Amino acid sequence: MKGLVCLLLMLETFVCVIHHQVDGGLNENEISQQLRSEDRGQNPPQTDTLRDEASTDSRQNYHLFFTDIHAALRELTATVTEQKTINRELIATVAEQKTNIRALERRLMEQQTLILEEMNKKNDEISNLTLGQVALRKENRDREIAFSASLMQSGSGYIGPFTTHITLTYRNVFTNIGNAYNPITGIFTAPLKGAYMFRVSVHGHGPTRSAAVISKNGKIAVVAESIQAKDQLNASNGVVLILEVGDVVYVILWSGMRIYDNHNNHNTFSGFLMFLLK
Image (cartoon, rainbow, N blue to C red; front, side):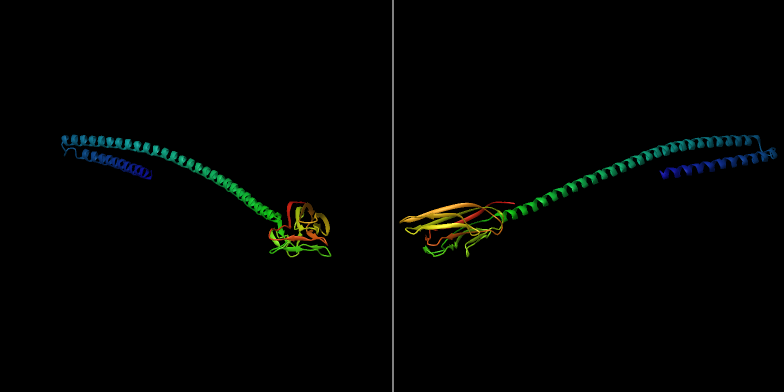
């Protein structure tokens, strides 16, 4: 585009120079005519005629040359105008494309923002779910309370009779989930408020009575008792107790009573948490 403009300027300058030369040539012809009028007697008429014809041909050639130059200038001007129009259209197209690109970038940014927000929400949900699962697992572990034990870890023999009531210590522990049962003291201590199930089994030989009592905080809950003149004695009992945190449950062998145990684990004490209470 800049090259075409420069070419037009050069052509216009060239035309101006040619016009100037033509004008200058005409002035010289006028001077020559004056000289010929003074010296006409010395020049033959034929020579003047030839000069006039040459001058006419020169003006005709200049006229044709100027016509061609003007035609070329008009064609170049039209080309430049067309190129300007094309350039304006290209500029408008580029501007429209830039606008479309900016709009697309805005939409992409909005979509990215929405995606990030959704990802953050999902992450929060996963985090909350994970924390909830951890808390639930911990709560479930806290709720996992169960135990079962028998009297003797080895050997066999009688326990009792005694002159006073005694707390039986079930030392052969089968299960003690939550460690709420103490095999040294024979006492179960409630770690949580809830409903607990307890069972006791008794085995002995007659004629001495066999009896065991499930006691809550020193008070009788249930009794498992068997009386027979001879042979084996068997009894069992169970109870659901509502315990507060720190309540204790244990088994008492009454005074004058006797039980027997061996590797068959006839005498057992068991309990577990059924559900929590508020």
